Length: 131
Image (tube, rainbow, N blue to C red):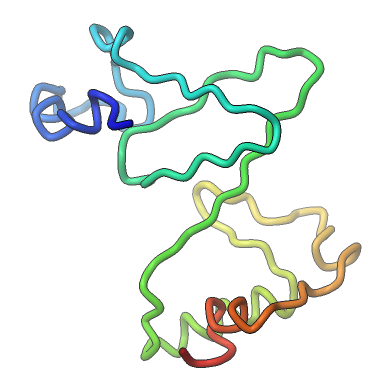
């Protein structure tokens, strides 16, 4: 499935005001083109986060919606600082922090859980062992 906006993003973007809100753009006229992906419990939606996307409010009243963010990028095997940051985050159970990630102010990862056990593939993905 390739939603209309993904196929036409560059053209659409050029029609938008320079001072638009990049996080909540005006989608007037696109209402019938917005794809609302229906997911069932246990489903996983994978998409390129550089493409336009958004969430809808949870109006269920009695159900929780949880998102798990997974970021994949080239390993940058020569970037020792980044490799050590990832290893430290895993080993010491330190949550990522930044604009979209508030960290773990309750320190639950550090105080309630053990360090994740990694498979050989997990060790490579993290950077503990070389490819």
